[in-house]
Image 1 (tube, rainbow, N blue to C red):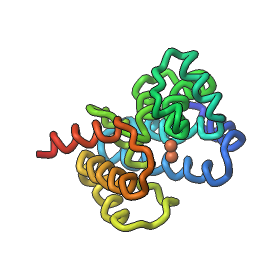
Image 2 (cartoon, rainbow, N blue to C red):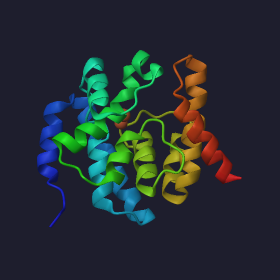
Image 3 (spheres, rainbow, N blue to C red):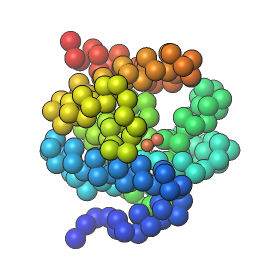
Image 4 (cartoon, rainbow, N blue to C red):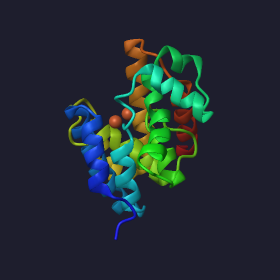
Length: 192
Ligand SMILES: [Fe+2]
Ligand SMILES: [Fe+2]
């Protein structure tokens, strides 16, 4: 018997998210479960975290900020200016409140899935990576190699995704959350 009522969670998410986002969610959940099996992590927790990682995507900027404030979660000026970034922190709060998730590791994986964070657990790394490599993601240079690396070397894959993300954000002049840079520095440090 599973700890989670997956049909109920999926049904609720299907109502809450756009069709495209829901498809992405299923892709991340299945990818996270596969990675968990390979890397010796609780695969049901990985599937749950994958399903719920974007559960706050449909909320407005105002709702995300309000939700974080109410829960006492710190919101930075950068996040107020780019509330898109906040769907991860708000998602962890929503997963606990609306989807009855109590496992702190799952909540952390939801909260850190966009930027990563230094010293992520194996589950957090898996969700971070699965979000990037799930099968529905558009093909782009290097993605094939990242997909293969994810199953072989999780830390290496985390570092390469962060490297790619920082380069992409730098090229497009999009806001870079300092957490992404901090995570990159951390994983670059342990890779050498
Ligand atoms: Fe996301
Ligand atoms: Fe996502």
